[in-house]
Image: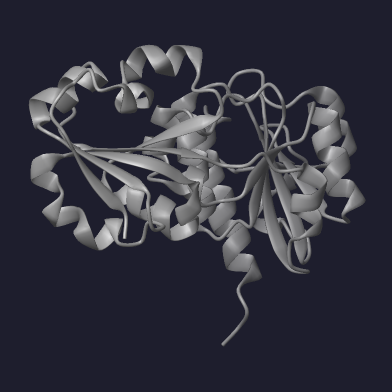
Length: 270
């Protein structure tokens, strides 16, 4: 069981990781992530209970959260504070009343891909700088059974608080790794014999005709600039047919459509 620790003083130094959340979002957390809300915490504990360093809960929420907290490793500190004290620590009224600090180990992209099963689906992200889009893509990756996500170095952090929240915890459950620049990302996938498709309004293949085999990877770029031309030249390009006057979608929406199509095409007949 975790250790329940009542907190009476908002200045308690044990809560330093939770202090001034929004300001800390801007400067980073030194490798730590912040999970917010019951659903996200539940997913984080289910995926890797050892990743949770501590939990901060409004005292009136502790009893209702007992079935989730029981999944934490023995000795994990759970700080229970009055709502007013918790709000003071965090720096704004935190209505959910549930926060957790955790740490995920950095993954080697080559080892991550090499460890996937023979039949695998990977999402590749290049230049995704918006945390809402990042969270939405991870949520779609989880919903449609992607085995891993690779990010290039220009992508924003999937473990930023807002990205985790938008992903409904999927950023903590779908394995991911940074793979260097865009070219290195594609090379990691190619070396592992993945069929690679890049989404582009000028794609040469219609999504309905996409078949990448058992080891499939789909690449998504930032809205506006899209994927770099050298990347599009290296892989198969795919477009989503749209009504006249439109040639692009929000990248998170695009990922949902494509991953649903990929997942549907890969289901084993019953």
